[in-house]
Length: 181
Ligand code: IMP
Ligand code: MG
Image (cartoon, rainbow, N blue to C red):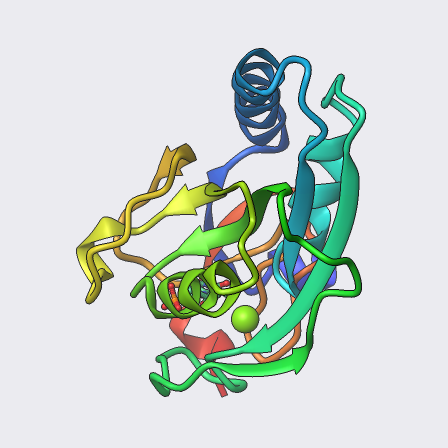
């Protein structure tokens, strides 16, 4: 692990804080979806770690699906374009859909996806995001479930990458400027 931690300026959110946050989000969802069978849709790749932890704290008869979208390329700033590389494999008509995201940044990805999925007539669509960086929002979007409001820093770990690296860190940190190539 030291190979990666050397690239970090500091740890922003510890493993313990992240796990507590995920538990709180799951408790809210468990209470609000009682008696329902929601479909959790993870937005890949970033959400896979969060999804895996969240789902194991959900006490509902739920199902899971994934979409692969790219909005950022390999760098640090949005291209503005959202590309769907893999669509849902389940039909969502009449389903209670919960979109699971690692971080809500400009909001472009989720506002595009909600419009894209709305035409399939789900019973409901809500957003659950572990992190929210409101300083960078360029759209109106607000998440229904937000774990942590974060500062305007580029962060990595717990699913979040820089150029496809650091997703496997169990905590979230800020990279040193030298780590950007
Ligand atoms: P949005 O469309 O600008 O809201 O972008 C959301 C996506 O951008 C997330 O799912 C992440 O993949 C990526 N992203 C945004 N901020 C960061 C960051 O600080 N670190 C790593 N990835 C980020
Ligand atoms: Mg990314």
